[in-house]
Amino acid sequence: MKATRTRAVRGRATRTRAIRTGGGISVRFDVRAAVVVAILVVAALLASVVLIGTGDFDIPTADVIRTLLGNGDAGQEFIINDLRLPRVVVGLLVGASLGLAGALFQSIARNPLGSPDVLGIGQGSTAGALLMIVIFQGSATEVAGGALVGGLVTGAAMYLLAWKQGVHGYRLVLVGIGVNAFAVAVNGYLLTKADLVDAARAVVWMTGSLNGRDWEQVWPLLTLCAVLLPLVIAHARPLRMLEMGDDTAYTLGVPVERTRIVLMGSAVLLTAAATAAAGPVSFVALTAPQLARRLTRSPGPNLLPAMCMGATLLIVADWASQRVFGADQLPVGVVTGVLGGVYLLWLLVTERKAGRI
Amino acid sequence: MNRLIADDVTIGYDQRVIAEKLSVEIPDNSFTVIVGPNACGKSTLLRALSRMLKPSAGRVLLDGQAIQSMPAKKVARTLGLLPQSSIAPDGITVGDLVARGRYPHQGLLRQWSGDDERIVRESMESTGVAELADRYVDELSGGQRQRVWIAMALAQQTPLLLLDEPTTFLDIQHQLDVLDLCADLHEEQGRTLVAVLHDLNHAARYATHLIALRDGEVLAEGPPREIVTAELVRETFGIRCQVIEDPETGTPLVVPAARKARVDA
Image (tube, rainbow over the protein chains, first blue to last red):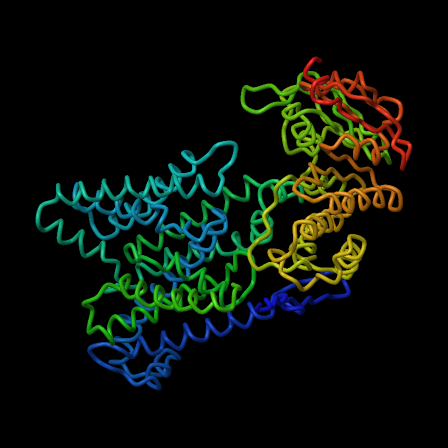
């Protein structure tokens, strides 16, 4: 008879470090997560520089950096600062927002499928945008506004429908999938009602791309991120407690429902704003948190790593959509799906052998 | 006055009332055990006592204050609860999980003090899970896992600790382990414990104060030796039995009547 060998899998003994000051202040952080965040930030910035140099008119990396630092020639300055930089900044912000929103939603739903694109926030935003395009023939700003409002209304509806003495994981996911199906139907209906010109415009918007984004899209998104990020970070510790179940979090003194409302509200705002800026970019919110989590190998929502992963993923995908697949033929959302999806599958397959996250 | 009191509370979910005008006092420094048939309101009472469920009438007093109006973190530093079901996040180690019990004592600028570290270590030592600190929670046995959750509740360092069916799903050895641990916490550390238990004989052995609940009403309360009688068991659970002296401990031992005699009752 073959003897079965069992081996206890040990976690990392020194997972966290604490810094303490004489004044009783102490800060604790996960070393590996901090390294992952640092690497992802560097990767996102490097990819951004490469992306700025990429286009109909390639610019050497050295020139890109020189121009970004304010020492470039006038021609390159125009291309870089006015045309390409805002597109890249929008890409970074959209990716970061989606990554963060995805991590928040997945943690609140306690389910990796509970990401805002699966739960219909993206489709809700699309419904708002299509409504502005098809019914009101609105301007670009009005379409963005429509997307924002659409996402917020969808998020609010989802919360109210899922609420039953608090919002719980499975309920949220099921209600979200229902809301998503409803929004898809509304969008299909709006498209059939549209005349040819509007329909073409709607389809372009729905592919989710960063083409032609300028500083006008940057400022609102940047402001929103600057306001929401500190709010989310301040609630990161209660969120980690929530992952142990409402009862346990409650007995530890976490204001359960308030934390959930604040964080869900933030995640819906981030998703809606990102969709308003770049259209519905699929898959980033779903994959970025999962990828980040597997890199940090840390339990908990991994908010900052997911955010940085989202930004990196989107920029690399945008570069790939221009460089690998040729010009702007392919919407960035498709490439994020291919890149993120394949990477996630690879991780899942290899982790099955390791038997651990 | 005792530290934890339910004063004339009406509790339930939505429109369904579980208990009406229920008054219970938890004697300080006692190991109180609540027993009663399924759906008698044991867990509901525990939830109300721990501020998780708001009574529709009456109030729960903690140190003389209405518990609902106290700040959540302040309550969490005085009273801990081990719920029936908790979720261990994927990939969390025992040490990390126990450390989360320190949450009510921490803040944005006080995330991990030397005290936190010491108390987490002590909590793991007193529950016998110190050597498991670096293991993943999801690969532990049921008994080990329950000890880890108790260690987390201990790390919260509350003078009052409520446990909702802490021995469910455990085999007899691990049940006794957990109860021994509770008795130690009560005797050696002077904590006030309130546990919901299903096994009457365990309750009679370990409790210093027993509360028998049926249909949201207290039928009897007091030291097990004084209140556990065949009459009380029949009233509470609707079964005929003999109550004899436990040959090991001298506490009341409930022996249900044989099937035929029970059916006749």
